[in-house]
Amino acid sequence: MSTVRRHRIAVIAGDGIGKEVVPEGLRVLEAVSRRYGFGLEYDHFDFASCEYYLRHGAMMPADWKQQIGSHDAIFFGAVGWPETVPDHISLWGSLIQFRREFDQYVNLRPVKLMPGVPSPLAGRKPGDIDFYVVRENTEGEYSSIGGRMFPGTDREIVMQETVMTRVGIDRVLKYAFELAQRREKKHLTSATKSNGISITMPYWDERVEAMAPQYADVRWDKYHIDILTAHFVQHPDWFDVVVASNLFGDILSDLGPACTGTIGIAPAANINPERVFPSLFEPVHGSAPDIAGKWIANPVGQIWSAALMLDHLGEREAAAAIVSAIERVLAEPALRTRDLGGPAGTIACGQAIADAVE
Ligand code: ATP
Ligand code: MG
Image 1 (cartoon, helix red, strand yellow):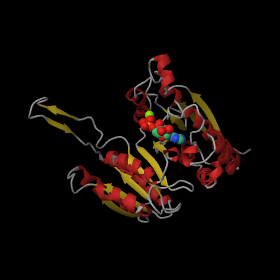
Image 2 (cartoon, rainbow, N blue to C red; image 1 turned 135 degrees about the vertical axis):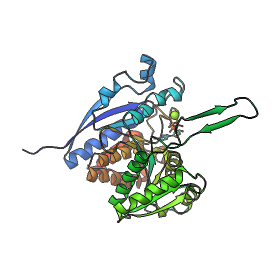
Image 3 (tube, rainbow, N blue to C red; image 1 turned 90 degrees about the vertical axis):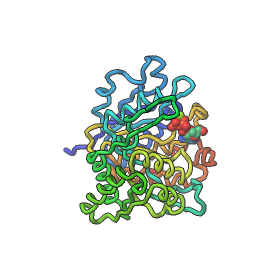
Image 4 (cartoon, helix red, strand yellow; image 1 turned 60 degrees about the vertical axis):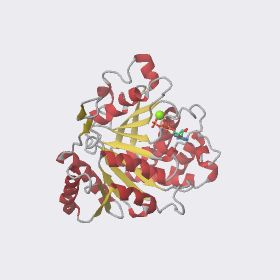
């Protein structure tokens, strides 16, 4: 008797085009799991959506952690419908809760120029840009320690502390070094600003230096964040894996995908690498109320995030097969969606990628 590898996925489509692109992600996952011989079990959840909020007065049920906490991963669409629920409620009541409670301390974004997607960087071709941004997702600059003194007076002083911990830095660096080690170029770049931020950033640099000898096959370097953003635009071919603190990573993980074209194709992952808790995989784009219901949304961001999910679950070949199918479909003008100047609808594009996988 052979045992089939099985993965249990919590599916949350959320709002707007989330409900249109998630089914395309599932379609491609079905195709790839058939071809590579592993099983996927899905449980669908209607919470973490504004519709749920309007019915229940909360974004999620009280026992949400019990409901999805033992799944192997969360496959997420989009959340937000600002016309009915303010973004701070919808976002803080869902994604931010997942990130915190499931200790998803790595935010991962691939930056890869795909065929058929015009890059705003002149003269760049597919193959020129192919790297990952690894962002620390739980501490650093985004602490709520601080406050105002003498409010409302001429002497007003405002402070907000950056809090970095050895454990917090080391765990994200370990993830980044290991990712670099698995890649062909084996090159890690660290974002710093130790020439201006004179206490926390030198410490970050120290931790990189301390860890590097354990990954002797990985070549590493560091750049100050200001020049690093310039290099993203002028020399995106220099990078392989870029690791950064919460704030710097936030900036780089928007800049990177922006250099490779439309928001409709970029995927993201919030990862708990030890798999103590489920990690979450979602497209970078939001619920796109302006095009929701028209079935013209580009499903590639969602489908690519399915590839990130399979990679995390150890199905590396299947993950690579999805990325390669996306590349082949995007190379075909007739299969592109409207945001890429093509005629295809959401389903036609998703189906084409599923077919290309098989
Ligand atoms: P967030 O919800 O993350 O704050 P947002 O609401 O500012 O994001 P999006 O919902 O991502 O923004 O939409 C921004 C713009 O990009 C909209 O005009 C939307 O139509 C377009 N867009 C987003 N996703 C897609 C997609 N998958 N295909 C085509 N167009 C998209
Ligand atoms: Mg939005």
